[in-house]
Image (cartoon, rainbow, N blue to C red; front, top):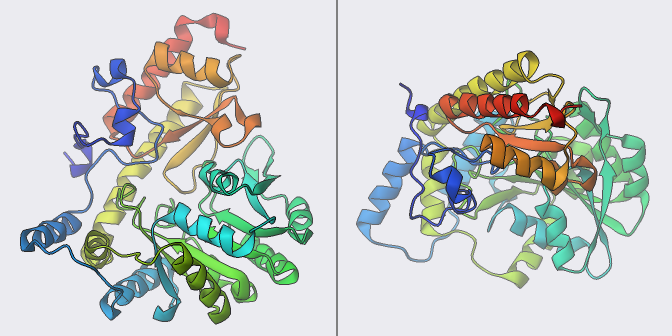
Length: 395
């Protein structure tokens, strides 16, 4: 048995995934598959370092050090193939905090955010909470995969009121890994229009089939307006620790960002975050991360095979990265709340509704691949059985 076959116990931790799972499903010892959070424990080297820190009993103010910067630089070189200058590193209080600060820097008082839709809804939520509008550029969907509509994106970026593009790579929820060719096109548009691009790459180490996610800041043409966001959050099952690091190569843009950040708050690194970074971004942490990815790749193959052989004509789109999959329920008449109520009540299946990412995706769901193989197979079998029991819902 692998360590990844052992599920964590979330009871009593006020864990969002646990608390939002309906009690009747928790009572059956069934995991929810909505949140992109792993059901197994984080890396042993991280837990060991945290235990040692706690035993010392010192939880005082913590600062950015050469050790901290060096660990991040090592990780970027080892996993992403890019050498970075430590001065580029700007610690922040999580990915969405970084988006909010970028919005204040670029869009206030009346600018607009650009996103590629469907996309993680908290980007738009951050903008709306500031009274700012979001321009959605729909991804193309040919029925087999999603792709960027560059004509529409160029039109959006050409509007001077649209001042920030938040790119998600790998893309949540579709699972696309945007190739370097696409990033070069975006960088050319950014340089032409002076649109700042914040690339959320917190899933970058979770790409399948040996893909290496090109850091957006590696594209030199776009660097004057480029910000890349990296984090332990997804790859080390660390989503509840609100911490991330921005990589901003351009001195002027970095100074603008840091000034705006300090206008919002001062601190960014706590003792838990510091210890986690310097223990995770190590050879031991990398070995664990690759093992966890290999295990989740097993789930990807289970899901792909099940949809191909037993749940067709319903479709799971290609899962290139982000340990999530986007499902189109082509074979069902149900959509939106009715669809997900059916899945929950009849199959005890808690999936993330597709219309959380864009209204037109009410017939879709996002599935998390970060559970055990046993739980994943059982989920799919329950869905298959529920659909078989209700022929009236099939197209």
